[in-house]
Image (cartoon, rainbow, N blue to C red; front, side, top):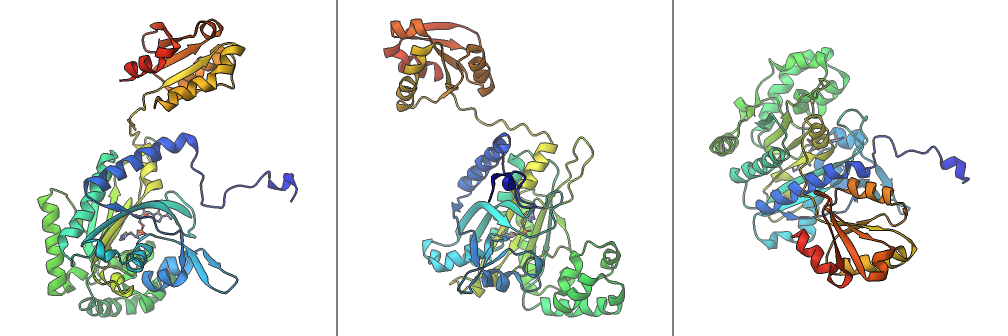
Length: 432
Ligand code: HAM
């Protein structure tokens, strides 16, 4: 292919490079996720980016939007079908069973952070490659305390990232015992309205009636208010479970909206489902009407993969969405600045000796920034300012001859010439 053919190529639709200027946002998020995971004792897991197609087809549901139209499917020459993972939970359950992680002690708390892929129509907060951080608790029965712990970890993460006005929506979608009965009632309510529903909802009525409550189409929305309510149809066990989750949240002073129309787009949930929203409004008046994080209980998913325990609950946060909201709210990143020095050379001889000198500092663990490719003093000083270094080391012709170097404090302009043999100790003293 000739060079000119590549000149105007961009990244694929809905997939974005993360450029150096955005990295501080990602650093901040990663820092807080690690902090929360460590604090609440979640262990990191990284699963493969590509899974066998049936992992998602059988777990998310054949009629879920993801499986029906959003998976990036790859076929191997031998006919095997693989999928770029659209979400993290199914792959983690696969890994949990494959590697016998149930032996690690129960419940097992896992967290992950990485890219997911969905062939969606790109729009604000909706991409084809996006990142999730997820928290999963597997095993340990279906105790409601674990649902509350997942919700708490996500809430604290959002709070630490200074996301304001967080609202938690929660619901229970029942279990194998109570859901079929509710499903029947829902079908009985919607069937006479079928002609007035959008095409997707007419399909949902046949294949996945609970998703009727999830439709964003205005014409369909108006029927929701009269639809039967799942909370009135839960069995004793699901009612009790929901009550316990809510009690834990109340004890924690975590306010929530009991949202009886929250159903979620993935089929693997039972009992608890939840979503976090924010009421942040940007300076230019933009509101964010997407979920920042979502999750729920997935006991049947564990069973489907043949896990020795059939209890699992978790949730995942959409990181691009977090960054969008943090930027709109002008969150101050306040990343911990790494202390360090900036090395400046003046003249040929000094430049020649500079690499070795910098290496001697690095060997002693002193972080050094430089712009050795620039010979002008002004350009190097500008780089030092940009880096926000606290000190510059100035090494010129005279210093090279005298085996010395200047240490300049950039905050107050005070400078001192020190012998090269004392450089490391003098710098370390200052950086303390
Ligand atoms: P989900 O609701 O599909 O759930 O995705 C979780 C979060 O990922 C959403 O709340 C949203 O913030 C973000 N997200 C989803 N799709 C996109 C997209 N196209 N572009 C940008 N962000 C997006 C799950 O994936 C479940 N695995 C969550 C879970 C974990 N349930 C139990 N454990």
